[in-house]
Length: 307
Image 1: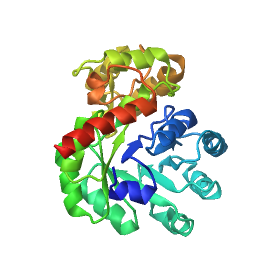
Image 2: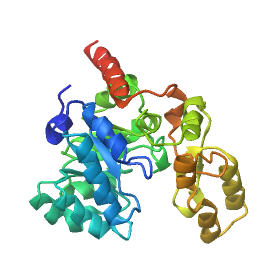
Image 3: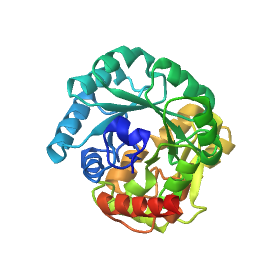
């Protein structure tokens, strides 16, 4: 399937894997790249040299394009921004901030810059800053979220900018991809389904929680702090929401979730860990390879779009 995004990024299918902290490491990024999508290494708050090592390990597993997701609030963002250039990475997605200060350096190195946004205003700002494309992410997605749904956000962003738009949030099959295309998107970003990929290093207990999730099993914490996060409900989310209701301080709430994503992803602590997943988790029913997922989704999408 040829779209402006496949042409921009030099990939076979208009599917980008989300840059999920702890989850989006080199095994997953390389597997998605080899399957024809764009794999991403999630730099999150990792030390810069760890990011460099991840990039080099991914290169050993694939000769296809892959990118790096940079959280701009990360204190190491300046160093990671340089490492991307030094290691010859050609695609960067960004979150939590404005990448404007890195634009000249990245453009000179031929890096395509794709910010993730949750509003029309931010999409326009990113286009003015020199972004090559935009990920418009709806509140259905897992992890940190905005306040507008994908169905409402994507067409408004498409109308507001002239660069290609990638839809994210609530997409896990070919129907979601076809729907995104009908809304004007040139590609999709998928996170939750790739959490349960066979190549994903996520602990089997976490994967099982996603596979067994129902449509109503996701919960949003952090609304009171201005940093809402969507995850699968468990003991930790219940405690967090109780504290929020009682007016707990930001520090108290932060302490509760300290290291909780690592606990879930690496240790398989599904009771006290943060099980980030989107509302679409109820649609994800089995563990497959990235190749199987992408081929299945693209087959469904093409059949629907050709209909």
